[in-house]
Image (tube, rainbow over all chains, first blue to last red; front, side, top):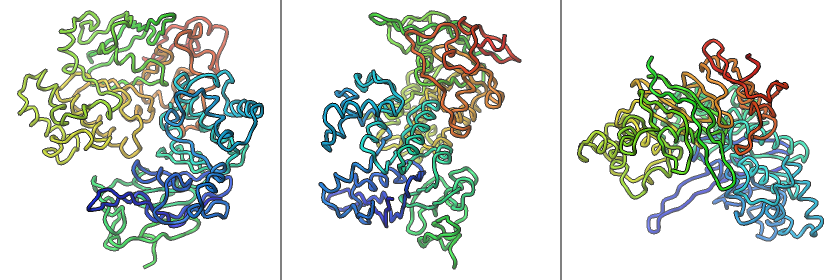
Length: 297
Length: 311
């Protein structure tokens, strides 16, 4: 469905002596049709940047994004805009994603207006269908964002995201600001819609238990790299970082400096001198791991 | 164990032009010495308002009735001056949002030192000295350098720890922490749990206001569940996470990802026109005709529950 090949993003700062911050570092990622890939990791590990790169909302410094056999990084803006119908994002903060001066109706109808799809009557009918689909009351459409709760707002954002029948959605921590009970209903809604509309999700979260429930496959990100990926990653973790994340082992230090070799070197309980060289990703029985422990030497 | 804080039949009403919001509606509970009580519930259930009422941080136009006894004296009767002796000295408040709770144009060291200057009457220089020790205790390194830095030079987790350092600096008897884990990721949560365990050892009492159930499980001795301005259950922590009493508590636990991610049916109640009788009855699986009458608190093996099932 969508594929990222060797993606990197370096943010440069400074005027005279340029300093680069590597947010995403040579990532290969693939999300298959009607699949949910959960992307887990700490804040600052580059999860959101990677999600935005796949939608070309952030331009990668290098690498390719292949969507429906087209390389998005080489498209002109107008072409890209057409393809954008097929790919959407559900952000972490729904209140920032909606215009506070617009009624919710207009926010949901905006995609139709931008892509000049529906006439006025059609538009109204579709918006009403959408709002029903996400389990909200029609009456809500006349209100402004500040007049509804966080959970309802997130449902409105979801309604807007699915308005143009997308094939791929990046869900960027869609429930991290919500209560447990509201989270349960929003996540259930997302999973329902995925089945009904056959979409693929990249589900970004730092909640490992949540990731385990929603995902078909899980990718673990650390310092801009995917260190482990596959099925059952959280039940049977191979990478030392995934193991510390799950609390099976504890990091040997507190200071997370990222050296030249393996990025996890300074914290890793199983490090050896080999780890001063960068490890390669190896594949073993459907799992991809980036660690010297599993490389043949 | 002595009771440090006793709240008795507390009502907090916000009176607006054409309606009254009953944010806290007849709440009673206590926190004992050295104990951690977690107050859990959904957003809008009145948890934070309750916490702020204890320190009288709410605006004047709020109607408060009931009693808040701290070491025997009613905080609601105290004058503003009398209260100042308690606020920050005897009871510390760790606010919800570390990013906006520090003054961006003041050095962190000076801000953390302020309660000590005021309440312990130490001069600034020695107070800042003590801050360095505190920062070291809470793993903000190197402390001598960090004391002279500004909030924007701290990471989110460090700001949170600096605020806890500020709260504990005057050796208070009770700390009220409002959602200390909101929006914080897994690995940093672990360090916040460690942090609170560390301060609990110093015979402090803790009132944790949170909707993060796994966090409450790790730290609290007892759990108080709030729903629509009322406490519906007060329960020992082990018992609560094994077999909670109130139907709402059961539903809340079942909505955790680790327990099946089942949503609670229906919507949270309105605080202006709450449902009659038991406030949870429109969403409750065990609803019967009796639930239209308001249930009282029943005591089951030392735990309290507000539900007719236990009559």
